[in-house]
Image (cartoon, rainbow, N blue to C red; front, side, top):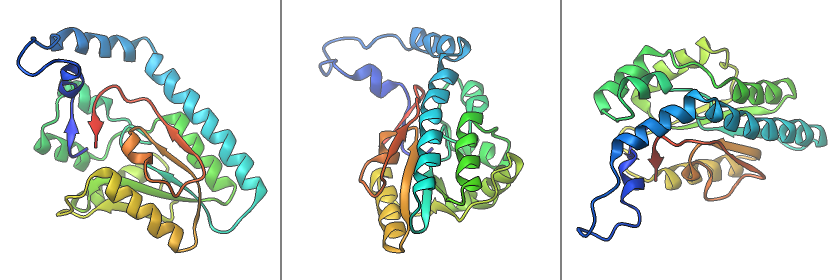
Length: 213
């Protein structure tokens, strides 16, 4: 959840510096609430997850060496809407750290279904997250709570690592491939979760709440 650009980055796009007032933030927050409450957000996640689930089942049946699915966590497998709504879509690092420690983010059930399909087919699961090492124990607790504790690896970002998400996650997938894993699918809610290659297929879930570089 680090290095987030909440909403404001989107609102500034297209505005010449200092020449025009950006669009007001409040209506955009209302739009986000309506998008979630209408069910459109959930339907978008379900549609992408359904495609991913079908691909994983098909690809697993074809066989291969050390088949692996890579999942991002936040807004991919883990649903942090309770935190986002509590913070009015803001990002306050100490509050985020407290939320992580609470270890009570529920699963996005359609994405959990992809996880379960992979494990049933004997495909390894690797969780690759921008959460810091300091939050590893709490993240593992959260994964146990939602019934997703059967994984090969949980890769967290080192506490002092200043690489972008693209750099960190690309390097991690490169290392997994070098270790002999065949990454048949990578799922994430950010383009930075998926950029950089080393996956046969990528699946981008919707996230209208924030951007990670």
